View 1 (tube, rainbow, N blue to C red):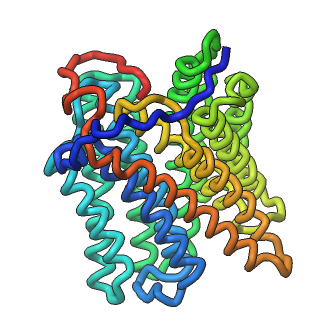
View 2 (tube, rainbow, N blue to C red):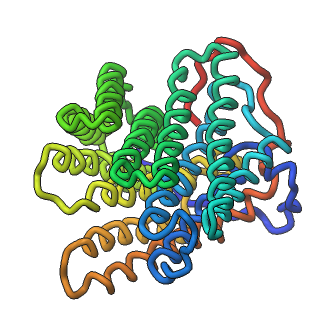
Length: 412
């Protein structure tokens, strides 16, 4: 029997005061709201006030960089820092160290908006330290506890940072011919991380929420998907279009097959689940679009990035930042109207953004409508969740499980 999920409001008078210690307890607490707020700001600036972009990283380059590394990858790192505490029993970053990581992120975002080469260099250094520090913290935790199942996670985060470094260096060196190659390398690194993590946690979430639902883990297909993603990343980085197309098509097809294998009809009445299914399907569709472009089919250049980025990452993110936040905050795994509205708005934003790519008289109006739906969705998330993110868990004191070397962990 399927359970309908809603959120229960805490009883009046039971809420505690905001605490810095709580806010810096786990990676998702500062990085989820920071990334979501930046998702609002970055879209608003790019769509409604692009003339404000006067830094060395400007125009469409700023938009591409901040969407991928400033928004999507930030949320992903927040999730991984949190999930790895569950996987290993050891919290990778907390307190002042986590605050320092967040400060690096803020410094990078501000620096890329300030004109002049000095601001650009300082912002780039802060950005690369952010991803390097995140990868180091994950590696130290995962390798020290011999959590073999997740040995590849720190490497993927490091690869994401390396792609960022290559993109920023290409801007600094005026090597604009390589910019899109490096951008798509970073985009595909992020896609591999999303494929790897989501195929583990989505079945876990589904089987916990829907009584009697059983979903096999499909470990073998996961290994094939990871190999296909690695082939796509390598082919993109080295300019091998055939290898990239084969890897992208294989990874995308496996993603769509995986969604069907997860029995989507069983979760159709559970918003916390169907939003994740929709995002994973969008990511798979985006990889197929990217494969078609790599194979030389005539497609708009912006289609792969927007299908992967908005229909894939955007939808997955709004689902993940709600589901995982509720779980780690000790809240009931139930949605309220504002959360469901945010889901619908992000899906609407994705559809409208893709329609806006078509050369029609309605393109500009559709783009503005997409931006408005996107901003309202993430504003609803911040309004609903920020008060909870700055307070301790409601069900227990702040604590982290004792280290258990060799633990295989579980999804969070």
